[in-house]
Length: 515
Image (cartoon, rainbow, N blue to C red):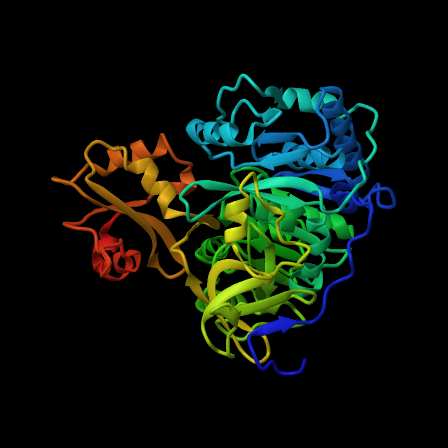
């Protein structure tokens, strides 16, 4: 490519999304031709439960028919409170297939958190696994996992084709307001994901892609399931609660050619006594949080395979990445994927090269959200003219490689989940013995970041009591792992809380001494 002169990467738009269109139909477009091929293998130490493309499509369209028979209409939101099982992607695609709007949520959410979502979303139904927390609602039907299983054998529904810009699904992300935000995505979002096939994965139809995440994580839904199925590859998912130490054997035993996980999983795999032996693996894929250069190098040395990182967000999935055909220079994220228009903005304009600014996505990107649910003002606030502002800082070189420089708004990253400290603080602030509270994520050792809560009080509080208080109000991934009492919380010249100071002023030995 011709060297850039400003921090603007634009190789032209991808092919336009077809009309009419349906996201689920696109994901299953090869299912008839590949009806006997394994689409999904759920792995355990003793073997695998295999779903062929034919069986998968039949279960999805049967469930879709059952949802229509239950009285739901196109456009109805369905809140998903399902566990880490194949029920999750089947129900997800079934809803999309007939124009319903699934709302996948983490199984870790507590009943109070779910209640707040129900209040704002007003779903037509809750798809509920009894083992997963939910909240009582008088306005939404309850569809149990048993109900969903009964639907699978119904005659198949037809795909509801239509405008690719209409809503397809909603996912929740935590924002700077301190409350989770509902992100509405269009059917066209799956069409945009094809830019990742070469721009990140190096994905082929004969691939066997093992994703280490849970079925109900959006990273797994996209990279681990939707994308392999779209191209006709085989998705491999470990059964629930599989420890990282077991993954090398599963990768070897089931002949995985690609592996996707958050950086923390790679680190835990490398902490085992023996280096992983992975003869069929071409390379690994990494997202969810920043990959450190030492971890990348350790994996390469231990396995002889490369790690390719991608950067994205709930509002647009991944859009900057390294790939087998375009490896990233050390300590950079890589380049914008072909077909993306990405800029580093300073004062609303593309910045000079190698100058820090806000990473921005052009509003024409097919993968960009439609907006936040019922929040037009909040949606508009994320745009500067034709650019969507990610809130992340970076710098671009002449070849388009982007160096990540942190969050502009103090967002935290907890195990791959973006999270506002304000949400955690709001939940903890009701503790009767806390005077003030502030949270941030801190690095306790290389490649390991945890949420830490800093508080003021007239005496040291029992950490076990604080953890129990948080556990009753927050999903596990939102709960602080460290609780540290300070005489006063640091502030800046304007009297506002200085979160950076929370990270830098602590004595490293104090953190290491914490359990």
